[in-house]
Image (tube, rainbow, N blue to C red; front, top):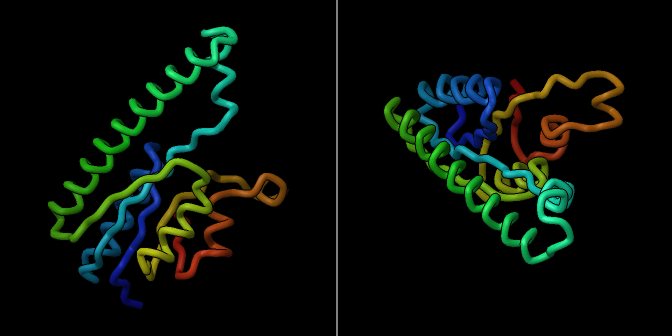
Length: 152
């Protein structure tokens, strides 16, 4: 099967690097366009760490959280740009994007709106009951993505 638009869901792990290399290997012979995509997970549970440092000072927490998010988004932007340059060096057309929130939902949504014909993403390795009860991003995407999915 030939693919022309491949969404590559990446994280900054060794597994993410494997997913990236696999995406390039699939995209090159097809001259497929890549969308490198990352989801920054940030939720209210992260506030607990800041409340311990700053006490109950809501303004201090808010300011510190905002700085933390800004730092992380700058790091993600730089990292995705570096990945895009590596893929471009392989002769591929590349875009990149990121969002804050639930990875499962965002990957599914981006695959739909970008009109991907393949999503490539990693698996954390949960199996059996752990995957059933805890779920996984890859499991959700495999079942609900609007296109083919390769979970590496």
